[in-house]
Length: 144
Image (cartoon, rainbow, N blue to C red):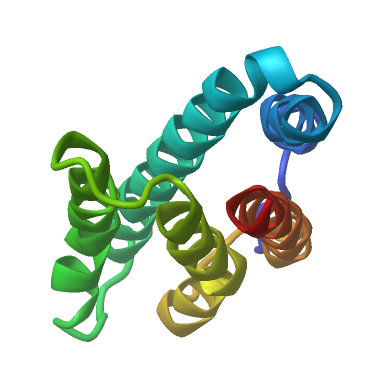
């Protein structure tokens, strides 16, 4: 029997787009708050991407047979999040390139869920909506 995604999970997932939408709109609408909005947009994208790695790890642990590559791939989002932060602390161009990298990786991240499998009914539809929305907004901020 296939488990269905709870309605609350769908609504909270969709609400998770709001912080990035706010940050993106602020980047374009308020010059005084632009830098802060870019920093918030970056950290939110990095946190969500890291969270996705934990989701992948959890999905893999629920299965009897998964390819071993899933465990190292599950750790990569956290490492990428930290790595894309380094240009800022070293004084290089930031956050544009980092936002573009994070956004692109978030946008394609549901492909990993597909490879793992074992997700509840409705999961992949929500994942694509959330990932394309969050990833797209993050890329738009990075190109601003």
